[in-house]
Structure formats: structure tokens, C-alpha cells
Length: 409
View 1 (spheres, rainbow, N blue to C red):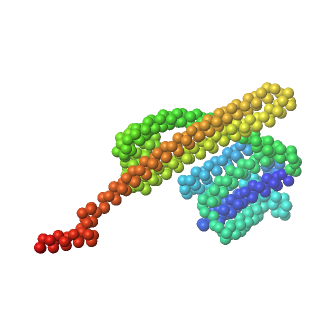
View 2: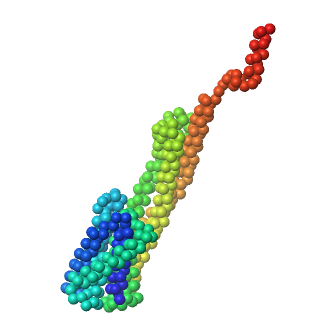
View 3: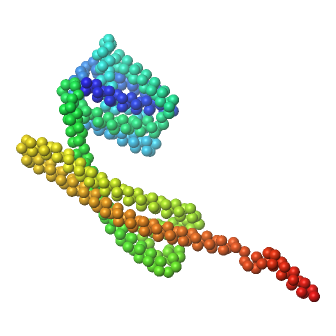
């Protein structure tokens, strides 16, 4: 049964969310139980006046489905950002019943009302609430014996449940008129889901092209800085590369940051090593981001081509050449922008990798060279002089005795 599948998936998603919540070191049992009893009792009262067909008709309405999806996204955003800021209200937001949970729990109450001898919806809701609390509590106890949930774990799963529950909405949107799940229902579901990604793909392609334009401008600016730095390095290596001469140069970019670090932490070599390691990590991260975009750009272009290709072929079968042309125009434009973004990011990443390797080699060389000179100078400052060594060794003492004997004669 299609509606039973939808209800079962929804209940399983939110049941594990509640299990993670109750397996926390200090679970909010009273608040949780009160919310669940109130929700199930209210759903039981609604189940007396609303039939199953009317309830499913709510999700078939595109506007109501959009509002439900937006509510899930809002809950997900509150949980995600609240957890990052370690806000105290995150636990209460995790307890909030999501729209798909209300729908799935309503189906559970309706099943209890239809398959038992209970006559009132509120009583059926209380029975469903008792079963829900018992199942969640038992699973939470078993989970505690294995590993207790942390506040981060149950808020993570609450956010994930609200985000993944959005996929349950198109399942009902594309459901067949009957109760059986057939191949056409699955095909319609996949078609509906693929069309949902058309707008995000177009926006992603546009964002990728805009970011690629920004990266290209940043690359040109960095090329000018690197040209000036290489000229300064050539002048520095033309003579003794002392640190005093290095500080006199007009450096740009991360070479200027390296000079500032040498001035601030000259007495702490470990801080200088950390600065160089952080710089290397930052430059490596930039190369990796460019590499990711070099692959994601063509992927977005391919997705943006294949999604409009389906209605374009359908329009061709109907003889609607205008619809086919409009869809093909969207697809080909997305492909072109995606390939431009991917190719540009790939070319820039290859050039920057070569530049960064050369510049980091020079920075490591200068840092090691000056550290070695400082170590040699400090060793020389604590070495005793030659006269002192001659005075304390055996030869010096013997020469002193002979001089005294000669003076006595």
C-alpha cells in the first residue's frame, strides 16, 4: 500500500530521531512526553473528522507541499545554526513536531482508530502516544547500553530527519490514484525528483560561473604580486640572503606575511614553523577547492542538459517544436557555462600548484637558512676561548710549571 509505505518511512525516520534524543545524558522526558501526548491527542481528534483521502489530498496540493517543505528547511536551518552557536534553545527546536511527522503520526492514529474497537479519536491518539513513547523509550534504553547520545548527535539526527523528510512529500505527489505501488509510480517519482533539481542546478551553474570569474580576477592580481616577489627574490639571492636585506624588500602577498611573522616571532622558531605550516595548508586548500570546482562545473552542466532533455523529447513526440527548442536552449547554455567554469578552474589550479610549490620552497629555504645561522651564532657565543682552554688542560698546566722552575733558577 502506497500510503502505508509513506507512513512507515516517516515514522521510522522520526522514531530514530526521538531515540537519539532520549538516549542523551539528560533527556527531557517530561517535555517530550507532554508534547507527544498533545500531538497524538490532537491528531486523533482530527482523524474523526478528516478521512484518509482528504488527508492525502492536502499533500497533493502543491502549495501545501511547498509550505511543508519550507517548514522542514526552516527547522533544519535552526538546528544546524543553533548547534554551531551552541544555543540553549536547540533542544526545544529538536522536539518540535515536523509537518511530515504530523502526517505520518496522523496515519498511525487513523490506523489505530480503524482497526481497534476504540470509538473516539482522542482515545486512539492516546493509545498511539503510549505505544510511541514505549517504543522510543525502550530503544533509547537499549541504545544507552551501547553508546549514549550527545547533544550534538541528536541535534544532528534531528536536522538530518527534517531534511530527508522532504523526500517523502514527492512520494505522495507522484502517487498513483490506487493503493498499489507499481512501476509507473516509481517512474513518476523519479521524474518528479529529477525536475526538482533543475532550478538548483541552474542556480549552481550560475554561482559556479560567478565564482570562476572572481577566481580569474584574483588569479590576475596574484600573478602581478608574484611577479614582483620573484623580482625581489632575484635581487635577494644575487648577494648574501641575509634577513636584514630580506626585511628591506617591498614584499607582497604571503611573502609580506612571512616577513611580518619573522619580525613578530623572531625569538620563537616554533611559531615561525607554525606560520609556514598554516600558509602551506591554506594554499593547499585553495588548490583543492579549485580542483573540486573543476569537476563540479562540468557535472552541473551535464545535469542541466539532461533534465531539460526529457521534456524536449516529449515535446518532439507531441510535435511541439517551440517547447523542444526552449528546453534545449536551457540545456546547452548550462553545459557551456559549466564547461567554462570547470576548464578555467582546472587551468588556474595547475598554474597555482606550480607557483605555490616554488614559493613555499623558497620560504622553507630562507626560514631554515636563518634558523641555522642563528643557531651557529648562539653556539659560538657560549664556546670558551683558546686561552681559557689552554689554561685548563694538562699541557697548559705543565707549561706553567716549567715557567715557574725557570724563574726560580
